[in-house]
Length: 300
Image (cartoon, rainbow, N blue to C red):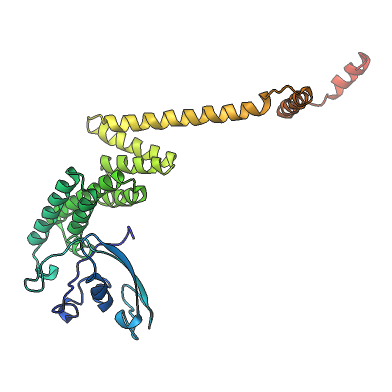
């Protein structure tokens, strides 16, 4: 689900099946989506089993998404927000200029920042995701020059903000995914590496986390800066690694140093330790011809 691109679709008696919005997003023009989403409020999420007749029916779909004939679908829907109403419908994305789209992006991002500051992390995530509905893949592919630069900057900023929000919720896999989106358009984003490193460390992926922290450290140092958070994260990883090594050493040592009041048990433990020591010692090399002769004359 984290890889799904948030989309906009029209949901009302007036527009739900209008042919002129058939291209409003992959899969978003099926009746089931309208019917199911109509029963959800903003922020709600639910899973629906939709019959084939409300999906792609007898014909199926041979474009994206590819769906076989007479196939029922399971829809996992979360309503991020509602724009306009039946009486005053919002402007369709297809009718928006580039400037209008970017203005919407910035507005939702600002709303998300305000929600995040006040502690409404879930609300911030919805606003950031709403902003991304204006930066769809097909839209981004058409951009060039300054328009592409500006849109990529907004795209990276939104996914970076989602990283911070999901990190606050301990949703570490989501953090890793959104950091990947940031790095796809900005390979030198130190914050993305740092946040992904924090998430990977929490998931127990210490080697990958260290790699991310080191990349973040190099990027900041190359820029003539020093990020105390990155330095601390690396130090914390080292401390944890030493603590684990120390604990493992104690466990291994305890296997051969346990003593009891039972002399038989102590003798058995000593015998085991001696056997392990003998096994660990390399065998004596065989005597050569002259050594055997010399040894036999000396009584060996």
